[in-house]
Image 1 (spheres, rainbow, N blue to C red):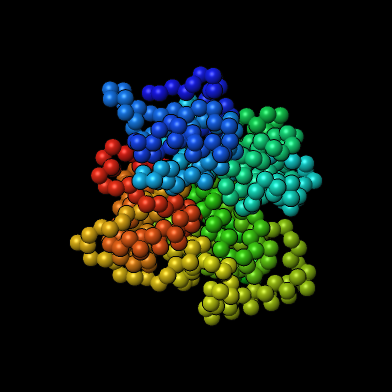
Image 2: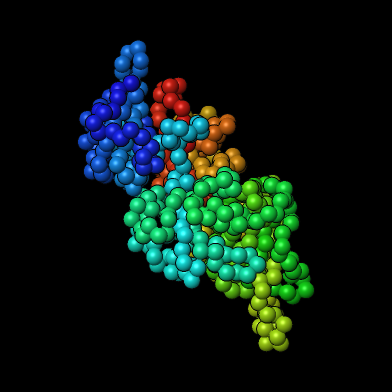
Length: 464
């Protein structure tokens, strides 16, 4: 392999973290061409082209080391899918995993957009957002609170839309916030070192000393479940699930209904998923609608969600409060059973086929179309990367067939990737344009043109 020039490269190639790119490109692309294409994004400390040990020819893989994580992330965002030299295929650009990592995949974008910060206990979510919005567009902010007193613990999460924005925030915010990338939700938080009590705070947030089964159905912990049939409606819901869902999936599903203020997946002292989440809406109507539409909803298919009201601590005993709740409840229940159009209740841009639709997405989907005959010649293939996990084939078929000429859906066993085969190139291009970066049933998809079949034998599909 070709080595980095020693004078350019630091001793630790993972310093700072996530500052090294993994690039899949054409074998004809040289180190100089890579350097020339990527230098605009920051200080390149080295380029490493992977070569065959026997022939010394490029394998079409390279690493690029930047001085800053934000530079590497920006380069990934801007250069992924671009053509560096006319006549060559588009490059695939990812953040490389650390050299000490034991994982067999590179870093996912989902792991690079959420930061964990220490904040004054007086901070509101609006204060948190105002403080960190200068570094980029924020998807959501969450302040970690004591679930018994509701008081802030002086800790919070900020989720950005792009990895480069999160990296800029970590690099440039006041050091007093001690900003770091938040660990993926599937990992244990019990042993993380957040310095000065950060780990203890995270463990407290994860559920204190309680010990529960990882997949607990219908156990709301210390929350008081309210029987909605008796009129005790609140703005808070408890969601129970048999299988492990991450917070992004639950957030995406319940955020379809306007007014969601808070979404927290409950974890035990070891960071394990307890099988339920707490959702709070800004108004009673939204909570009622969410409960009626999503209780019993299969997400993913085969996993039926249980959604119930929980005590939100508000005084509902006064005659005025009781009358107000009954009035709103009557209006909302009437609207639910009389079948309101999705445009009246759902956010614009979300496709909701029916109250029990299996497709929940932020993409504008055309109507269903028939599949192309199985014997049709494949004119274009799309390569799809799923995060956090692949969607079922029937759901993918439902989504991708709407652009016409879909022949078949193929998922790679044991991987988070798949291929969509089309009989018409224009239909494939339209599907890629409409679905790239979109979320379907809580799963984010990256849709790009697949490499020609003749090149598949010596390439392994990458996950982000």
